[in-house]
Length: 110
Length: 112
Image (cartoon, rainbow over all chains, first blue to last red; front, side, top):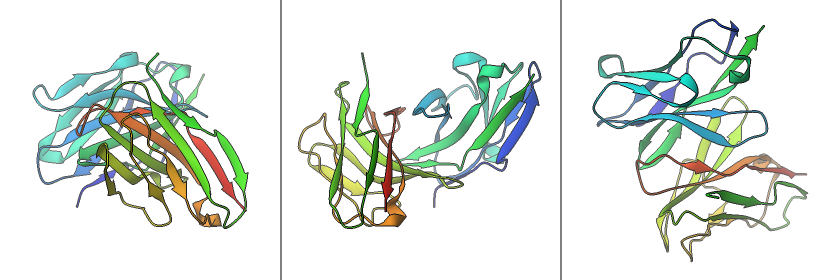
């Protein structure tokens, strides 16, 4: 069965520090993977996607993610976090049905 | 402007009173779906539709109905709402399967 695990419920980082949000997936075939961000009171916005090819994908707002098939992971990274990055982040896998992880809440402290 | 529009944005109602949440997209997308978001559970798919007149159950379809009579509209129907359906609901659309989804702003339902 398909599933997505985001092990970190909540992460706090200082502004300017680097960020890595973890995502592990379970899927039988080549996965279609996504990261979405949800700001308070808003819908979800696509940050980036992986379909095939280069395993390091670039997204909006300076985010990137690396697909590692051997580890079934698709971790999201950003070299320098801004206060406006505080939000909820969701990893998702698409295999006909869309499966979301439970989300990681990011707090950014000045 | 490309968008997914949900109405209403907020609704408080009582157990057993039928309600419909509308969803409309203006991007000519084939694929539409409904999710509910609950604390600690992330988003769970209720129903999805790959095309007009084609709908399928997601992970949590119990207590919900949908229809897809036109490409642009995908209403979510709660025939007899119960308190455990109190949640934040999102409609989404995409060009097709395996494509990024565009989300509406959400509908917060409270069933008393």
